[in-house]
Length: 140
Image (cartoon, rainbow, N blue to C red; front, top):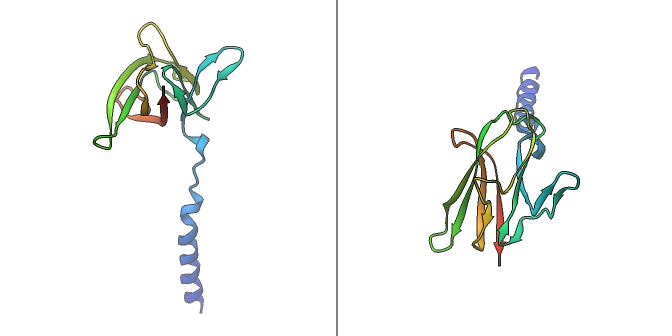
């Protein structure tokens, strides 16, 4: 009887083991978009659907990002072949202790979505590994 109870307990624990390793959305960096970032008002016009033009890419994490050289990359959806294809990439420098950062127009990039369509946007580390990503729709 003890062996049967032990085997039963083992199977019950194995069924619930995956639930013990829960990851919440905020435990990893998230990437999202807004029309612009203002120092006093914060994020203005947060959405995942915008008209063509300049946008701001936001990244937020519960922990320090521990990054310094990063890139924001746009891949555009090609409806003819059903795949996302490289579109643009912008380099930035941030501080390793940052956990909340925005990427917008600067002297070296235009961060402009000039063509309507669906885009996959990535925050990449200095080895081009994905840190965070999100989808956005650009309309006319």
